[in-house]
Length: 440
Image (cartoon, rainbow, N blue to C red; front, side, top):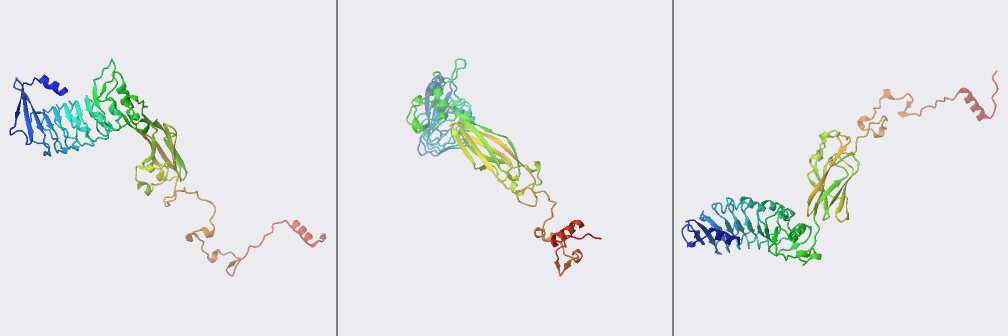
């Protein structure tokens, strides 16, 4: 409808079909002139034997149509010699690849149609070269997703046809382009084609459904009778009968952001996450310790050989109720290589969040030993000879032998009595049973 309106406003007077040297082979060129001597040139290439986009298109082409050919790809700068191009129709071909710079120099392009091709992906960033684009047709392709960054290049689009693809959801970033219309701030209408896709009706579509149901919505669906294909309890249910909760991006909390522990001890790290749907949690060690800032002695070699980032298994992970999950990791026998930065990452279909715990290890270890145990303080007790190292054993020299050594063997030391003399006499009397006579 928009195309016919523009043609009518241009006041076309006649159409002259010309087949000359400037028209590409297997194509038809037409010049639509007006009474003021100006005109518009259109080029139609509609031949199954055509396998590539012609390179010698007339530079004054305003409308180019490539239909039902064997063309499979749109190369870089394919239309850069057509600065006046307003309409570009590449419909019902065999196109599987569109180069991200296919539309360079098309600053006046108003309408781009790629319906009926074999596109499984579309280079949305290519639209930055078409600032005046208003109509984008991707009907009947093989698109399975629209990435969130696509919204950055669709702000000026007023007609977007994504029908008959393989889409199951749309990103929230895209639905924010079509806010609800208010009387104070009216929004321009956007026509959106979504029919004939396998829609999975979950919280990701909740905003879209709310906008489409609003009485004064700026969004107009080409077909309002859309149905859900999943989840199983909503299969076959029309969009208009579905009430979906909003997705909530996860929020992550930890009991502490910095943990300091002794060398050789055991540590438990915990984080809690909330969101809808219930987020999944993973632990990642993302940074090595800075041993030059710790109170230890020197850096350990195996710390530098650790490959980061790396995922860590959860010791315990539970979801006590919908929308809440917590996870714990256990670090046993802490060594210096366990120090560093640990990230608890929560993710659901609404987004990703994470919290960071910094683990510091303190203590002193022997630099010549690989043991995780701290060095024990030196004892004042002498080691027994059996536990001494060979180099530490005493040399048995004659000058060191005690005087009671005989035959090379040490004799038992003599017993030295320290009992007073009066007590010794009493002990003798007790042994003999006779009282001692007093001395004269």
